[in-house]
Image 1 (cartoon, rainbow, N blue to C red):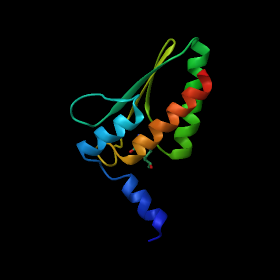
Image 2: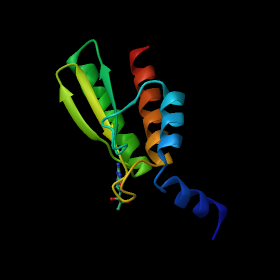
Image 3: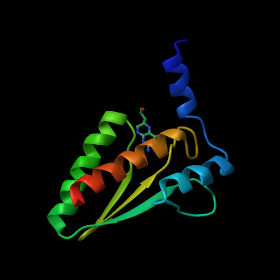
Image 4: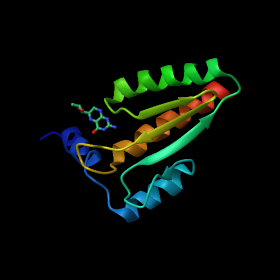
Length: 111
Ligand SMILES: C[C@H](O)[C@H](O)[C@H]1CNC2=NC(N)=NC(=O)C2=N1
C-alpha cells in the first residue's frame, strides 16, 4: 500500500472523543451536535440571501472535490452545515479537514 493510501484509510477511521475535542478546539467554530459525538455542526450567517446561496454553491463544489458531503439547511440568510462519516459510524479526520475548508470558503466570501 502506498503511504497516501495509508493516510486515506486513517483519515476515514472513526475518532475517539478526546481527539474530537482537540480538533474542535483547533477549529474554534464548530460544535458537537449532541453528546453521542457523531455530528459536528456550524451555523454560518450572511448579509444577504444570495450570499448564503453563493456559499452553498461553493460548499457543493468543495464537497464533490473531497467526496465528503454535509447535510445542508438554508434558513434565509443562515446556512447550517452538519458533518459526519456514515461509513465510519462517527467523526473522522476527514470531517475536520472538510469543516476547515468550509470555514475558509466562508472567510473568503465574507471578507
Ligand atoms: C461512496 C462514497 O465515497 C461515500 O458515499 C461518501 C460520500 N460522501 C460522504 N460524505 C460524508 N459526510 N460522509 C460519508 O461517509 C460519505 N461517504
